[in-house]
Image 1 (tube, rainbow, N blue to C red):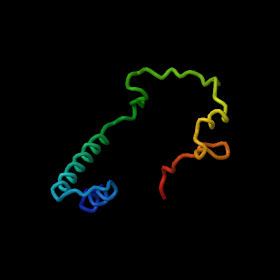
Image 2 (spheres, helix red, strand yellow):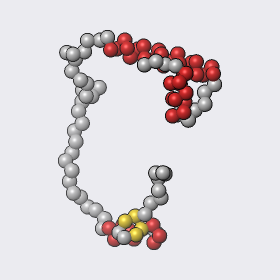
Image 3 (spheres, helix red, strand yellow):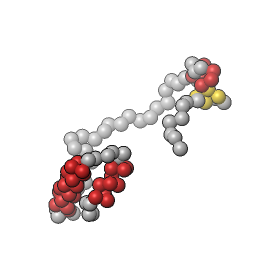
Image 4 (cartoon, helix red, strand yellow):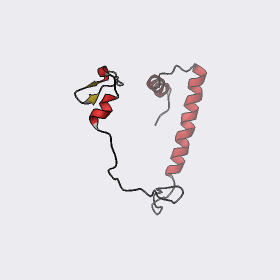
Length: 98
């Protein structure tokens, strides 16, 4: 991957940042260093190495799902203001804009 002004400009646009000329030069150098370290890791022979699932070697002890006590839908909707439920569902503010 070539780290040039076009890449820095694209990354700045995606991250909605406006780095100065000095910051752009520093970012270019930092990205080159990072890619150099990754390239160095690519030189390692890892075919015989097992993938690591957990750093501690301890696995999660998950409990089985069990149906427990639950609140009735009508009781739950009774706690919502009249304007905040409709047709048996809670109405919430939109969080994804178009």
